[in-house]
Image (tube, rainbow, N blue to C red; front, side):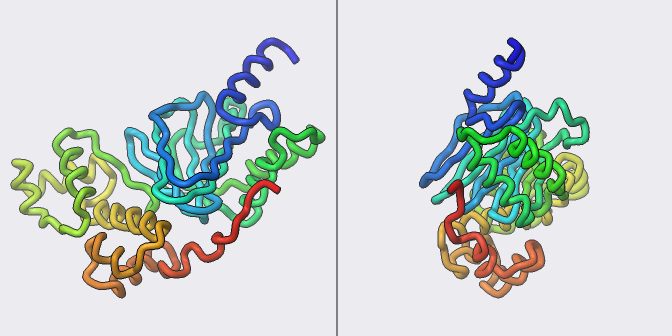
Length: 269
């Protein structure tokens, strides 16, 4: 192994267990956690086997339930957190050799095959296996990745200072629906200016942004085992049925069924 390859392996080992040149695995099985703000020199694929993980950058927050993963390009500072028991696997991938990989954060669909490939790589980490097998798993994994639009599992953050403070206030009290006219007056803007600025800064209307904020909060509360009634009230829905209907429209399943397929322990064997 040449000097450059040795340096790369050392870089990977600082963050996780190297499985082959260019790929490393990080495994977390714990109660609650919150990382320091940090970045990786490599791209990261973050997958929650059980529980819900959130990943926050300067541009927004992504919530990772068991049916999805998040792709994070290299050198982006972020904070990773969980508010309940969590089991997740994270792959660090040298993206420089594959120009087709996305250059921005986005949600990745986790098919049954992709899930097994991620867990297989975690199982291979640190074990004396044939290099050919490991590289075959990685090639298949990269082919299986399906990059999806980030909605509704991401929440873009504005950079405008006044809008940033306004959004933080909304996140602190999602049960309270502030009329646009009142919000605009509080920001010393016209209604039209607020709507135009908010759309430009986040890519979403104010109503759509609030709806996504409530949905991401609801996912976290569901993972904590909270009741549908409690979640509906805390997230600003008029009734449990209204919350359930919105949840199904957004994520394709009822709140009660959302985590069912992934509740059994699954991890390296």
